[in-house]
Length: 250
Ligand code: BG6
Ligand code: MG
Image (cartoon, rainbow, N blue to C red; front, side, top):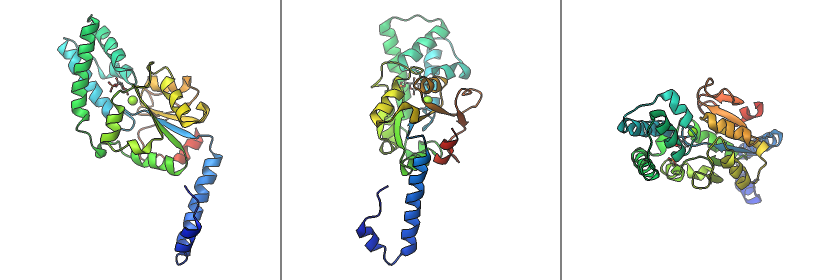
């Protein structure tokens, strides 16, 4: 937040209480930021900011059924945070199906088309409750923000939901060569933001993502079930009621 300029002071001559309130907020946010070890928040996308984890599950399940088998929601947890081709390999192994590389590429493209059909219908109302407000709070508090997603469709989703403008850096599946739990995506995010990994907090809905944060030397806030995300430093059901002040308790 910029400090009040002389001109702004002049404009506020008739409204001293407004000026005092703004100055108080400015000092409060800055003293809060100084006390905090956290300098940046890194966000996974699918299942954290938007409910696309469900779309991935639906599209993968349709593929499995077309190939003559099925898999459970419990197995699906293992696909969260994992790249498209790695997800396909795991699903084929569950079904005991062997395909040539050409067939794998074709099925991955078909799955992506089914998935994109759902993604293209997304609008700003599809952002998960409280997520946009929390991103705003991070920025007001002077924290840097980055996206750290395995998805090659991340930018399209951020654009459709009007989330792109909340990020100082976007790292997605087009920038990485290693899937979570490798920390590559988050380490690239910290580097792009110019902050030390130890000062970053990662928000994740995937077990692999929590492990990636830890392997990168970062803390993790799990978004979802405390049973599934037991390794995270803190688990929240969603962003409603969550505030930057609570990062201090990590
Ligand atoms: C991750 C999802 O964010 O992105 C995975 O958790 C998904 O389920 C991966 O497979 C890759 O996404 P995409 O959009 O590139 O197929
Ligand atoms: Mg996710």
